[in-house]
Length: 489
Image 1 (spheres, rainbow, N blue to C red):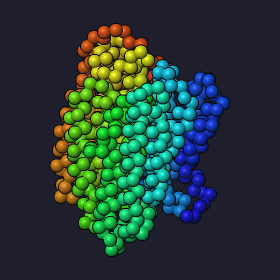
Image 2: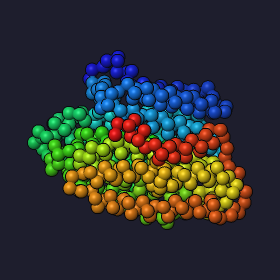
Image 3: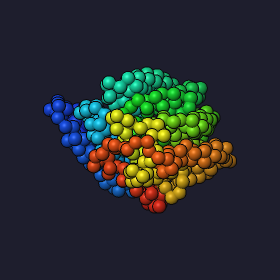
Image 4: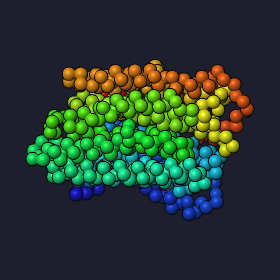
């Protein structure tokens, strides 16, 4: 592996998150027993700097220009920097809403902010991954941090149980990931995602490629919580502190999809692999259809808001897998559609979990749908923010979620011979079903009376995220062309 000092300039967004994360972990030693707001401020500053650096670097790239870094272990291109900026935004939003939640619910742990940024650095590594080794390192860096943050409320038995389940399932998925990578390496003789297509085309062991591809489908299925690998998600979402749940739903899922774009869209995509992309796309598209359907149907039956959002997230994972299949089968617009979907989904997710953090208090976290009764009369701004973000989840115009689903399903329709038409129909039908359980929360907020006054958790950072996310969701819906041009679609 060759190293050039100039490569570091292209990796500034990653380096900022990693360095600031390490500084924050060490800084906790000097803030024992003090207010951790200053640590949160430093975390937000690091995220903003990383996001700005990503925007500056993406503007220096012309069209599809890309640079291979650190001996082709990482790649710098438009997609990687747009996703890096997205991860910086979601991490900053999580850091902004965390201090109020920590204070209200009694889990003031300063190391949290350092672990948060280190986990975000793993997400950025996945966005830049150009080698199976960096895919593995990025996933583990991201995942280990999230395991720790899930158990940050040490006195919460539910949180400890959720963290243990998440950790054990994550370790299980890592085994599939490593074995799948090993089989593909045995068949191709390379770990480079750029060199892999040509190497696989010359392989004398096509069976290893198919088996390795299937194992990678299972591994990433666990990471994105696709059915039937989703059983950890509802418990982890419910047991984790609400800001951490938002980070899991937005950044972690988006980073896993970013890795799938690199692995299945670049290395294993097209007709160069044995049996074409059907080697892995056939099972993956079936998993996508089942995930969309079961996620939505199960969400309809949930009374706990966080569990409802967990199953909603599972359903969105299924839609994203449709885009991954479309990209692997040759759709030219699938990658841009996937990135746009990730942006719209992540922004709405952080907005929703900001409102969930705002509504809950130490005495009553208000996680049941009935607990949201009368929110519109007492706190109309919070109810409006929640409504906009939920409508975006459901794909209602003029929100970003509407165009996200439109562009992604359109890219799937572009696949040769309409191979994905049936799963697009399933996705559209399920989008209509999802409106029901999103409107359950809206109905409770606007058409039911509260049994007692609400005492929300307030902070300037929390209110900022609650205001910014719905506005950005509407902007994504009103000006989708700007974002598609930025992404390169």
